[in-house]
Length: 299
Image 1 (cartoon, rainbow, N blue to C red):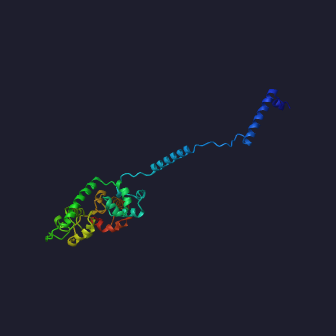
Image 2 (cartoon, rainbow, N blue to C red):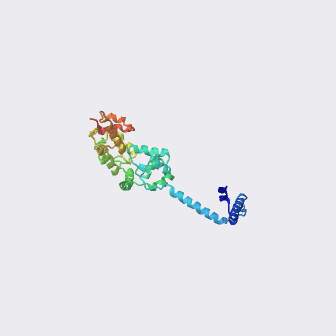
Image 3 (cartoon, rainbow, N blue to C red):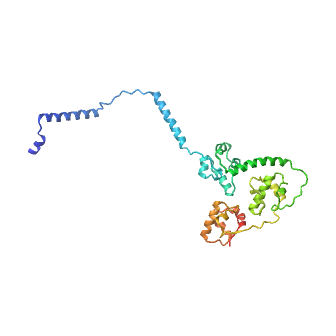
């Protein structure tokens, strides 16, 4: 009993303090339960200020959304990927046409050619073409070709009806003057044909003429009505098993990606026993096989 008495035995002032503390606790608990401190009064709100503040927030959101959109920087349209084309607003068909064109080892050198290959709409072309960036030498060539094309278009209608004697009808021996006897072939195109012929070491197929850059099919058809391959060229072939990467890349029908695939395949098989093994390479361009092997052999 002494133990309990020592804990509960207080003087009057202490008992009064404890009683007052308990009373305060009961009062505050009651206030919370009965929601005494709540008020039904509504606070006056300035609606015009709220609308102005909300408009400011909305404008900041729009600016942030615009900032998050991917920005378009100058680019070469020849290297548009699926992802890049989708960002630009191109359809899958338009992107596929571009990729198929690039697989032929050809390049787009103007916005007009880009539209011709991809068939994009005029509105989309107008939107993205300002960002096209071609190499400086292509820009200069386009400028010179525009001036020469104007001259050629004039000469196209000014050809003389006088009989012109050709030195040869063999397209591999034809001179620039021989080629210029064809309506539509001026000095620029004749030199371009001869330059491409030198790159190929001579035309082995008549339809290789269609590969000359900028030469329209209708004009090429006219050339082939007069000039043919009387004697196929003797092409110096290189051994696929010993050729270097740089040498193989000089093949007019092999681009960088195909060159890598060929070297990877060569490392895998150690040595090609027959040049036809190139067809075993995944995604090898079978349509260009006959042209590629003009310059290769397996020894």
